Length: 189
Length: 400
Image (cartoon, rainbow over the protein chains, first blue to last red):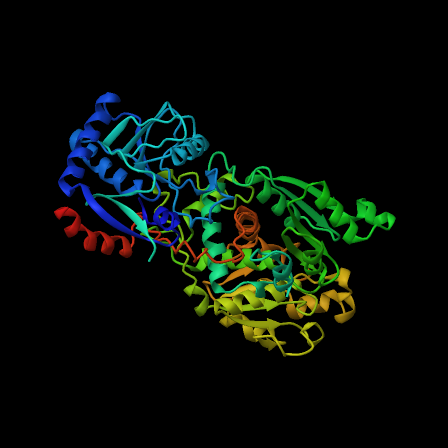
């Protein structure tokens, strides 16, 4: 869970207290190498491939994935970032989120887009992202890569590439970074 | 004042944007930051967001306008709002209906926010007492025009704040893209590929204002633009100097954080921004100057005065231009002119204001610091508190 999302988690303004480490730094790296290979395999190469990291948690992951794919295939893959704050369905309900940078480096028409996020939870962020991506052109296909799928979907959305399936309780929080994955709770300061 | 009244009726909700003095530097910073995001959106192939769909903006103008009215309308439509426009001259106001009744009826019909322009100062502030929804002052008499001042500051910041990254351009890439696709189209930079987008987004840094000296030239006394702009620049730390014949300078220096001068030629060589005001003949300005020709010879920006400006200086004007009255024809279209850039900025800035008033009105112009802090805009999405939490938590967790 990225910092921005954590600040919105209940209880408001709480602090994330990790309880257990689910993946260590090496585990995260191995998962990323596997996902990179799966992406290349599924798309039969890297032609017309573009990675889009969701702000904020998916951005470092997409950058790392892009670097690994480039290493494996010897071809540069464009990597963009997308902030879905303006597309969320809960704008009236939650505090206005500070916006992060959206930067899609290519027109997406005809491209195979891999959306990258850290944690897949309710699926609402991904829904917003699908709507946002359609404003950048008609992609040939959109796939979804996440480091952690923690369940509790509220929409019919499924990931194509998963680092780790992690059953969680609704109240728990997952913290994903390139340094590892932590499971814990947000508690009042 | 307007805000305090609103506090009574609806706790912790912004009643609108009436005066620049409703804002502090954090509020202006928030609006600039959001305007950056919306500028990027406006540069897209499909420059439209679903953010405020279902909301309706009523634009009620009891005075003529081109830029402000269309800019509000486009800003609202880019956010998927519905827009109704009411020109007082073509409404029941002509039949004797009071403005209060007109506004309350528009709200009853379904307006969720109002942009109000009126020739009398204080009308939008009064409207906030009549209406339970946000009211934006789109210009009230000689009082204020806050969104104009905000878009002017945004334009100045775009020009003078260095862009992040190693882009050669001083402009944020997003605005260049918008200029290319959008209505302003000042530089058709067709060679610019999309490859560098994202590296050049302007920072929210408002430090650049502290080094700036801004001359505001012309009919200060009757100018709501000048009142709002001076207030905004004062908050941001820029120095202002008002230049006009004595009859058009404010009658008293009290309340103006500005220098005043009657000699344009003395001021011009030392300014970074030359902001030219229109001679407002509809407010009787003609009586304050002997002739328009004489005004032009002393206060018009002609080619000679243009040459007196420092190389890095820029020329701005809120429009509409009176070519040949306050500004020379060629100067208005010169490379130093940001006039069309101002019009472009207006859409993004008004989107930001609408978003803050209608998206989730938290009662503050700042980021809602009860729950959300400022985000690092460096694409990592992680700040120091995250790191330290992880480091503290990790050893215990590893043992578990």
